[in-house]
Image (cartoon, rainbow, N blue to C red; front, side, top):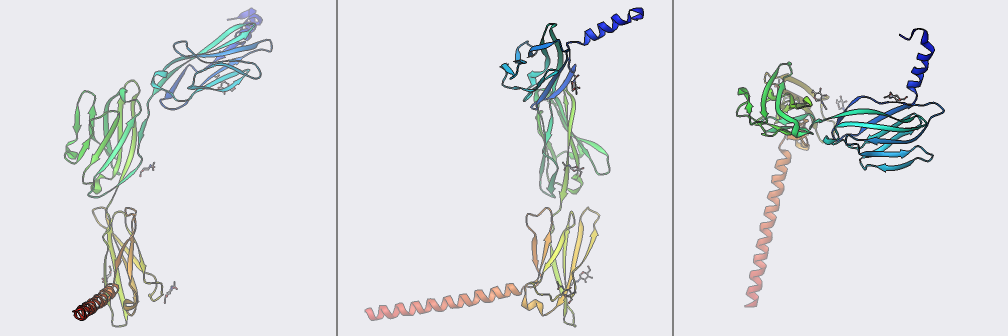
Length: 366
Ligand SMILES: *[C@@H]1O[C@H](CO)[C@@H](O)[C@H](O)[C@H]1NC(C)=O
Ligand SMILES: *[C@@H]1O[C@H](CO)[C@@H](O)[C@H](O)[C@H]1NC(C)=O
Ligand SMILES: *[C@@H]1O[C@H](CO)[C@@H](O)[C@H](O)[C@H]1NC(C)=O
Ligand SMILES: *[C@@H]1O[C@H](CO)[C@@H](O)[C@H](O)[C@H]1NC(C)=O
């Protein structure tokens, strides 16, 4: 296109890049987050940048400074800070993006002798979905899953979907701006969805093991589009340990500690410190069809131990604040009964003595 005038063309091209300011044309920013705006400038050694100004969509100056050493900031919006400034670039940060920060921003470089040069970046602001993170619920209790969209006024509809472990997804419930509210038939009566748009809560009553799944809250927004987040729910069935024991003729006792739970419980034993067991306990587990597991721990020990110590099985489970303890022998219990009886008898004796003494004194007084 330039043909024989190539040198001129080259000159124009070089000339065109002098003092040219570049900036990204479009940026997406998330509300509440910081946003970096950048402008680069190509200058020759003859050019000097005197001043840089950043303007918002209303042409209001957000930040202005003189490119001197030291740098002199003549104007600064409290929500804006200067991030980088050198002879080739000027970067500013909007500390916290607000919904009305949407629009086009300009950086204007006052260059001597070539005059002022500028570039423009248009920013669109979107919201963000927040959720609480994965949850666990105890079978039979209720649980609530929550999600928020940071620009509630843009939400047109909220929808919750359930994705089971097998991967099939079903819609659980939805709520739309103009009052449309629905809960899928299979969840009706047990699942409630809040009648709100910006923050949404899905409550499941009487949680069952089949409620264990990942739940996605979907915000249908305008103009941000569909935004979603996923929370996974684990369902626990708490153990109720049971112990049993049988003594054999050979002087040993076999004790079992059994706990049915989801996930499987971990069973340990406390035999009072002394090593009178026949090897470590043996554990076995059986998966039940309903998602729970039965764990049985079997311990073999010298029968004499039963009268010396309390033997207890300790059941650990992630759904328990502290482990559960189940006693094999009631020796400690009977010891307590004896202790209480002795105390009781002593108290009665003491009372009799008091009454006697009192009567005696009253008698002498008369
Ligand atoms: C500005 O310059 C920096 C460093 O040279 C570069 O990483 C960045 O991509 C440039 N930005 C633009 C908009 O040209
Ligand atoms: C939540 O649970 C899912 C599936 O169990 C897992 O893939 C994901 O990493 C978990 N997320 C967090 C934040 O722990
Ligand atoms: C302990 O459990 C095992 C296997 O589960 C069983 O064979 C045994 O009879 C049980 N013993 C007692 C004392 O319950
Ligand atoms: C306890 O005794 C049994 C057998 O008598 C032995 O196998 C085991 O290692 C002992 N454990 C400890 C902690 O000493």
